[in-house]
Length: 431
Image (tube, rainbow, N blue to C red; front, side):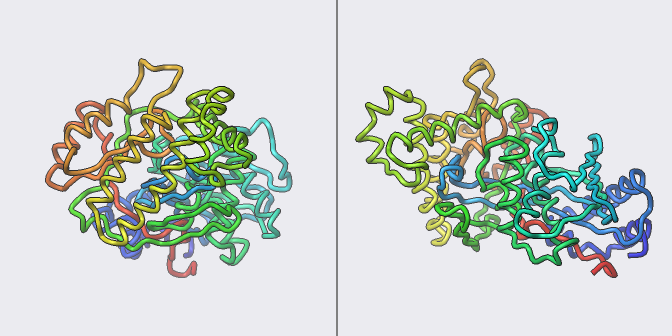
């Protein structure tokens, strides 16, 4: 591609419509054309009209089963979705990674300095530096680039905007400086390292893995260095149900301590049982030692441990239901998962602000419409973000109208599963 303005003409001429169809669905092609063109214009306004611009994308994800199981070496069922972070990229000849994300100040990271910077904790610059540092740790090459990004992955939505951003940075470094030889699994592991160590959030590996690998996947994290990943061939569209994520208006930004308490309490229970992670224990072990656990760690830790051990087995049942094309059983398991998260994991509202419970309201309303027909559950990390719903097509208009009358226009997102994870898009002469 000669330059950025040529890329705009290339996109507007429909040359990328097939790619957009594959990533986002046929109904979204015109929207994506405009979105990518605006991203290229954003790059020009920020950096200038450079030669050989490149396009990258990394998706958000939806957690289908395995709520808060990954960080204790459990199993999950997850999928990438057709919301993503995209980037217009041009490599540079410096040690600087400069990323201007739409609506935010530019991050400028000098990758000749790859030590954790305490001033960057909880900031996107830490994710860039952490990703570059771990690439280097694994013996891979790194280099500078300029990028303009825009995202429609809702921040604080449980769709994992941070994981998508990390995977995007890793995918760019992979293709521009390592000839694409870094596997999607390694990129996910590097992204998790960046978030855990440099950003300071003790997340599990599910979000990054779903964004990097793509499609519907089940992952067993018993060995986190070599997770067992299996793609599931299932089309939710053929079930007669839409996948709807409802954003209740909460924000994850100041809730790191709430999330961190969950893996911490689970590991404390495991420690009492002589193990490092709950995956090495059993439900029977917890019941046998419940008195001691309650006495030393409290009831919430015990309940969260019991949630983990049942949820971990529930994922296996969910996968088997999908493989058997038994959607009725699958829906029952989705509801069971949400019920366990609400009552035992206790991540539907914040413990310090019980007067604010928008997710509880959303779950109650969803149950009223979907009971006996669809399914509903807390989605992702919880604490006021989003709920996940499988809504029969004939109820979709009613469901969306009711939800948006409560939480505002645009709060109900009808999504589709995306088959690709982090990718470099093909743009003619750039390939």
